[in-house]
Image 1 (cartoon, rainbow, N blue to C red):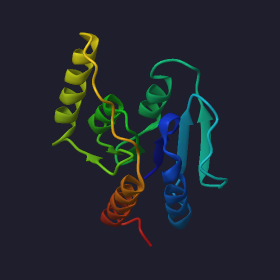
Image 2: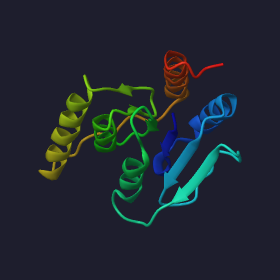
Image 3: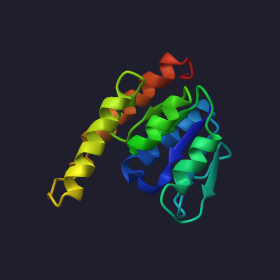
Length: 151
């Protein structure tokens, strides 16, 4: 299993959590973004900067990810594309996307986008908190345990 991180909007609170997991598991990891970001220096992490442009990082992640890999992203259309490849996707708040729930998340996202396009002002997601980081840490640990990666 390889880990892919959609780096452009990766919360700083999660960087030490995921870095410890990468090191503990010696997990081959790719951080893909439009700009330079750092989770930490490790022989297990490869940083890849793609061209600026909508979905460039997403397209690269989809191209690289294979069945059984894990992608960390808050981008629901990207998660949908990953699930279609029989890979796994977890968002920054610890939600594990699956075949059973991804279409519902995608439909809700598309509905909210249509509402905004009609000129309606909607609230964005709530601010990212320590509680969200804790939920992410629990989900990542559970995921790695389930897939027999945890030491």
